[in-house]
Image (cartoon, rainbow, N blue to C red; front, side, top):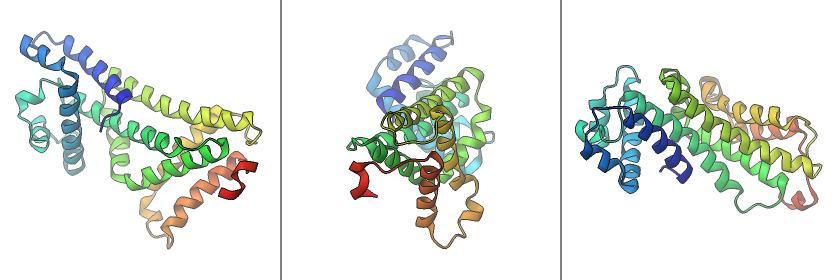
Length: 236
């Protein structure tokens, strides 16, 4: 499901795009003003598009294919998107938002900075491991986005990096982190877990898949020089 932040970014982008289309009639304009209907339809479109893109790839897929997979007619679908590129934007934006949502859920009950960071690292690795196909789709097809849409998706990725930068800064403030450059650290730890998808052809042969996940988490913790805080000793 699209989160509140994701809905805001996605709807803002698509409304701007729709407003530039003089061919959009008054009926369509009135429909797109219903936020609940827009959210529902966008969720249906994203779900259908992911299925179709995985099966056929972005370039071969048609809007008709996506509409059929989403259970929508082409006429209905065009009330909410202008083109197949708009649909790809919704998909990419949602996939990145999924990682943000997973991290927020993982740390919401943690107060200790060290445990929060560890929980966030584990959450990202687990989410990427569980959604390898979606992650590969993102990396394979994001280049097809138009410039404005690509900037919007990269802004979403930037928010994801900012989330981790804040977690690292909190650890530094408590003297729990040796790595001095929190921004660089955030760039590294938001990219490194992608290995579970990009190198899955090799990692799939590893005899201990849980060990792969925990090994990645431990590797990042050690690389950052994350220390065990007094409050964390019972959770190590």
